[in-house]
Length: 163
Length: 148
Image 1 (tube, rainbow over the protein chains, first blue to last red):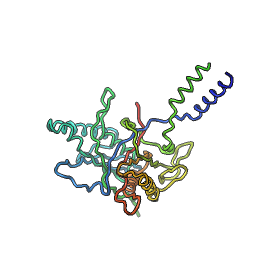
Image 2 (cartoon, rainbow over the protein chains, first blue to last red):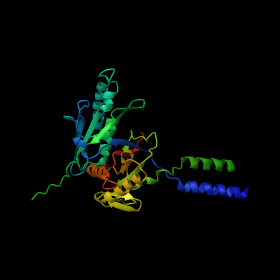
Image 3 (cartoon, each protein chain N blue to C red):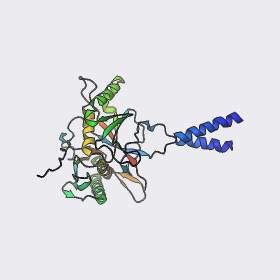
Image 4 (tube, chains in turn green, red):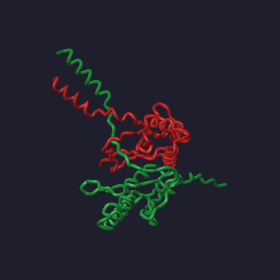
């Protein structure tokens, strides 16, 4: 009995030391086939991608303005909420196009993210999240658009030098 | 007494996660409530950790340039083509189509997006050999699951 409890304690100590509290991680899938993502030809069967432009504050990398199509949605967390509502509205409209096209319209719809080079990456994740799903009041997730891609990389902003 | 100890061992065995060994603790992932772990484990995937060198006590960034962390090594994004080619060659040796391989990008939330885009572009351009025609195409951007 005594050797058994020794081994058991050793095991217990091992697990105590190897225990690492890790926050659960998830991910967002992005499908980006070869080469030039922004120049992919749009066929008649496909809708043109929804354009989400993310403008950065050059000094800090924070989000200065989020533009969806030709509408400015601002720069704070409310911008992502507004984007989420806009995407939700479009997905609902696409699903109501016709019974034959039931989910197909929303499934085929692409979103193109066009961020400034210096924008902090966390804002891009927020934008992808706003496009990809919606959390209801009950806490369930409603998927929205899954085809998300990046536009061409923008030029890195150079700091302005004044004489 | 031994019953309780056994219970404790069982508890620790269940919650210990040995699978996340590709995660690098220096990377501070962005948080998002929609970031959910994939329902089906991916067959072919590898992880790229992109983050900053930080002060271990305060967490302050000590070097403004982000690096790709490969265990103890760190590589600048602009010099990572060789590493990506090695990954491509690994999957080619296993006879796996690169279009089926998912590149999991664990990037720090404070990294410039343009650099993440450059990394994705380098993955797309990675070739196992000169005869190869395509690089990696599938990407998964990782984030910490936010619960509130």
